[in-house]
Image (cartoon, rainbow, N blue to C red):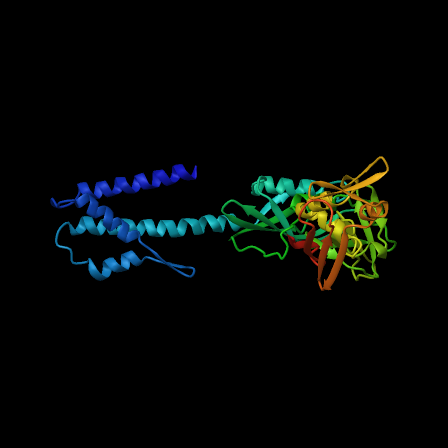
Length: 392
C-alpha cells in the first residue's frame, strides 16, 4: 500500500509539472527538464539535528528570482517543490502524532488468576502492533488484590520492528476495565543491555501466568505488588524468602542452590512488611571450576580438546595378547611391561595446572597415542570458557 501511494504521489508531481510546462509563456529549449530541475530545487532540504530546512528554496530566493524567460512557469515549479517539501515534512509528523496517541484496549479478564497476561498482551499486540515482531519486557509492575483482581499495572515493552524499535507503555485505566497503551517509535536507539541473552516478552508473561492463588496466601495482606525487570538476571545468596515457581508449583529455594540465574519477581505488600522473591525458569547451578573438573568442562566446549583426549586416553591405547602388553605410539604398537601398561591407561594423561586468576593454564601430556603428544589451553573461570588451545 505504501509503495502504491508513493508511485501515485510521484506521478501526480510529474503531471503537475507537465501542466506547468503546457501553460508556459514561450518556447524554450529543454524547458520541461528545466522545470523538473526547478521542482527538485524547490523541494531540496537540509537536515540539521531535528530541524529540516528548505535549503533549495532559499537558494532560489537568493540567485534565481530575476529570470528573463518563462519566469512564471519556473516560479510555479519551484513552489511545487516547496509544497512537496512541506507535505513530506508535515505528513510524517501528523502520522507519528496519531500513532503516539494513547489507545484503549479492553481488559479480557480483570482477575489475574482467572485470566492470562500472555493472552492479554497477545490481544494488545494484535490490535496495535505486529505479532510477528519479537518483544522484550523492559519493566513490569503490577498490583493484585488477595482475590486476584488486577488493581494496577505499569509496564514498558520494546518491539523490535522492521524499521526500528517501538516502545509500549501500558497502564490500567481508572476503572480497571481498559489498558491504556502509549506507543513511541524510537528508531534504533532503544534500551541497551549488557547481555545478549534476552528473554522474549511472550515467555516472560507465560512465566507470570504460573502464579496461582495458593502461592500468595500471606495472612493479613490485602494487596500484593509484583515487580520485575522482565529479563533473566543473577540472583545472589540472600536472607529473604525465595521460591522456585514452575509447572510443578511453588518450592522454597535453599541457600545451597544460590546464586543462580532466573527471571526474578519481587513481591511485597504495601509497606514491604511481607517480602518474597519468586524465581522463574531457574538455571541449575553450575559447579565451580576446579583442577579436578576443568578438563571435563573444557572438552565439552572445545572439539579440539575432546578429539585429543579421545586419541590419548582409554583402552584404545592398549592391547593385551598372550600375556604380553602393547601400547600404541604414533601408529605403531610398542611392547611395554605390565606395570607401564596399566599405569598409562589409568594415570595418564599427566596434567599440570598453573593458576593465573581468573585463568587456569593447563598442560596435558601423554607420550603414547598419536602426535601431538602435548596439549595446552587456558580456561577462564569467570566466563567458563576456553580461551585458546595449542598442540606440541
